[in-house]
Amino acid sequence: MIYKLIFTVMILMVSISMPVSAEWYQYEGKGYVVCDAILKRLNSYKSKTEDEAKNCSWGVVASYPGFKEPPWEELDPKKHEDLIFKLLKYRLCGGAYGYFGGRPCGYTDEGLRHEASNFIKNGGLIQVWRARLLSWFEISEDRPTPPGPQTVIQLRWKRDVEQEKKSCPGKPVVNWWKGGMYIVADDLSGPHPQVTSYASYFENRTAFFFSGKLHYVDGSEGARIGIDRDGFPVTFCDIRYR
Image (cartoon, rainbow, N blue to C red):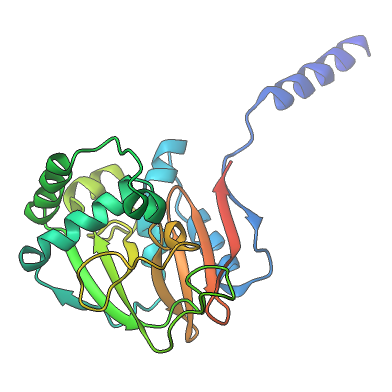
């Protein structure tokens, strides 16, 4: 009897010490069709390590059959190198407050122009879409947003597909990294000076339509998905790895 008890305790100790199988889980968004579908899709592709799961998640999310891209128009990157430089500066130097407010930036203009040049040399894309993403450029009744569509630019970084296939065996791979979106002046001269409240939200997300509704997807190490609600982006889905 004593040996049986000892054996049972040993089995319990081993089972407790064994790590639980890691998987994707919904931190937020359970019950929403697209969030449930993306969770199921992520968990259908098994990874050997946590790093592999996170690093390969963008291809799995972006290739979801239910997603449809907006009607982006391709621009010639070489003809818009100055705009690319300005958007990189806007992105890396504190957004609207840093770019227009003259705050100190850790990057020089020379260095950022070099980054813009590399972006083009490495196959980066610049796309434009005219749509009304925001009802308010900032939360202020004193400064309503002008009517009509807004000019949206997306910078899209190229990926090494063959290398990604080696790093993400058996998983979907897309040939571009998640985009960065910016509302710019209609003449494409630079970032729109009035957009303040949601600039950082858009620059880390890619737009997709799902069931005819505009969604904003951040596929960094999982999926955070927002939806357009009367001209305001609202995040409702957050999927992480554990």
